[in-house]
Length: 308
Image (cartoon, rainbow, N blue to C red; front, side):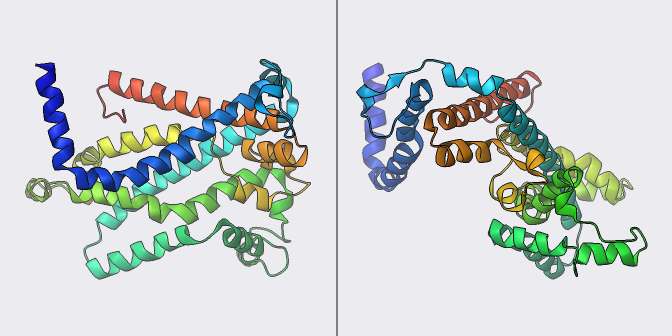
């Protein structure tokens, strides 16, 4: 029985050899850039010196992990990373669903496509351009935000937003939403397109208005997609970003702007402590992977769709 199954599997491989050959470059790419670099995690357990060979390195055990969890600087950047990640996830998650619902209610197809195209165009801008726009709009001299707030009599004098720590996390959140909300709505709109139109027709006959249709048909229809996207978002809870924070931070807001990725850059390339930087990066990846499995298990126990 087993031989028969193996033979059948080999026959399928032979019959689909074109697809197998097409997948080889992708498999090599994943192995080369996703799995081979894991070997570098050994540096987290060494006092790594670039000039020495692998067998000449001095092993340090868990020294660098102990240093991480007792280092006030790392605990501070961990706090910043989690806070900004939660803000980005909450704002981006909610705004993408709401925006997709609103777009789905548009009846004029041409107008809907124009709005959708305009909304996801910022996704293709580099973070360098985006940070330049943000810095210009928030500047004291001729900054659009300050001019608008003063015109509305909300403030009396311009505010140097990028020098006040309490504003920074909000600026990061709004910038992320502006850049990514249009792109994030695409998958929800695709899920909405798969809902049976007969359900809307039946609801309209029963006297449901647009809000009731959204609440009783559209949202339940994309529930599985929402859960899957939530699981994937939880798996990136320690990926608050790098470019935006690195380019906007300055000495006045450094304590609230640095993330784990900036911490890794500082110790790895500025202080040449590759072992500590590797330990921090390893910690981030292990936590992210663990959170994916935890969220996936909880979704399974609650009877929801799951990623794995």
